[in-house]
Image 1 (tube, rainbow, N blue to C red):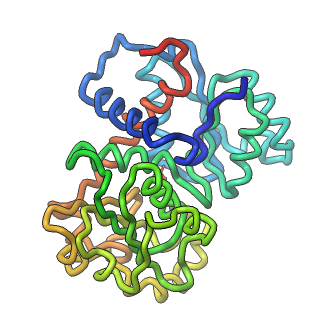
Image 2 (image 1 turned 30 degrees about the vertical axis):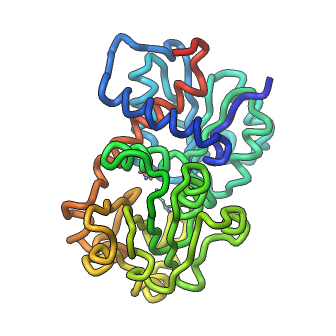
Image 3 (image 1 turned 180 degrees about the vertical axis):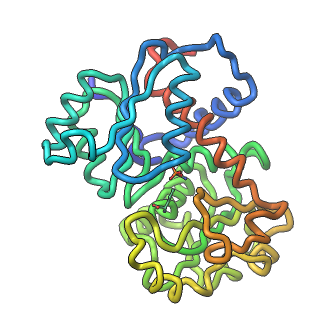
Length: 302
Ligand code: CP
Ligand code: NVA
């Protein structure tokens, strides 16, 4: 039987995502050290790019559940010396129970999944960041209840986070208002599949009208560092600041996947202000991914 993978939010139904989010909320409230459903199980984590939250949350989550996590980088495995992905996926999956990858190219994760005998989790690619969306949605549900029918605003780069927000809008039934500079729009293939779930605006203030949640991300993602200066020019009118938050609903939340650059994509006043829930969002990576690991790996129904 082919294992279930979590490469994109679209791999799961809206009901499955809601059930994961609600389970994450329960796991967070009722931390039971005796509940070790993954005892003896091993997660391999392959990181081609840096990470603080993703690495620590998966490693701690496996430990809480009685399992282990192994950190692997291309630098010190044969992946960095050109061993084919297909062979690596077959070999690694023959020895562990789950594989998480953070890679440059999205195709690396999809190729791995095709050849893996165990579930593969996307821990961020250039195209998508679905694990972050589980945490973001958990955070919204905790603060405000179900996000169905709400309006979310994405401001800034049409990047991996923006793409996963589009998928979340499709699966969870919210409206996504997007304001990105013309040269940094999300991919048409992802936008076209979303139909009425997304709408485009020329300015951040216009996109934030009637919004329940305002979200942004760095102007230059990992691997785009040499474009920083050029992007600072292109994105200068796309900062989430007090004026943008004032256009949103009074009880709107602010989120950012972190790491953030205060004074660039978000003002310090907003990210450190009362509407910001960034630290709940970061912590929820742990709880949401524990729910994901339980869903993918637990043999017994809970
Ligand atoms: N948000 C996020 O994925 O953080 P890390 O890069 O620290 O893992
Ligand atoms: N868009 C960012 C997200 C980091 C968590 C990046 O890819 O670097």
